[in-house]
Length: 146
Image 1 (cartoon, rainbow, N blue to C red):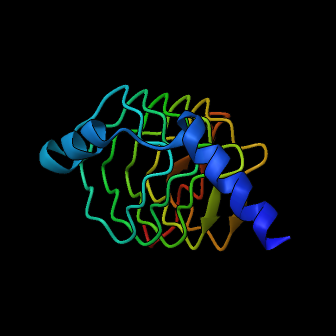
Image 2: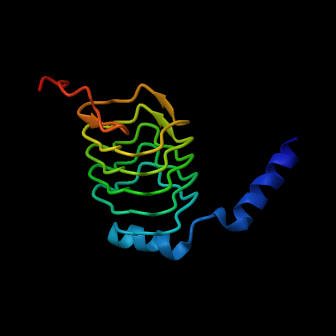
């Protein structure tokens, strides 16, 4: 069984699901990479505050414990992304695909999720405060003593 899993992982990464090195370098250098292929990139604990990744493919990427405050992820494919304990305060996530995304202890204070697909996202202990949900409704508009 472990051999089968390893073979499937090798097959998956060799069929174009790995990020492009040039796109990763561009993001790290400029904090901006629009319409990039960053699928599977590992950004554990990275400081990507203010990063612009609109329209990018970030499927199966890992942003656990990353700082994505004020990040622009509009229309990005975030399917299966690990946002565990990430800070997405004031992030722009409109019309993004979050299906299968892992949101555990994720801070979504002030984030805008209008039109985002979260149907199969795994959500646990998420901080929702002034968060615009996919429907456009503000979740917890009076939290944090405001």
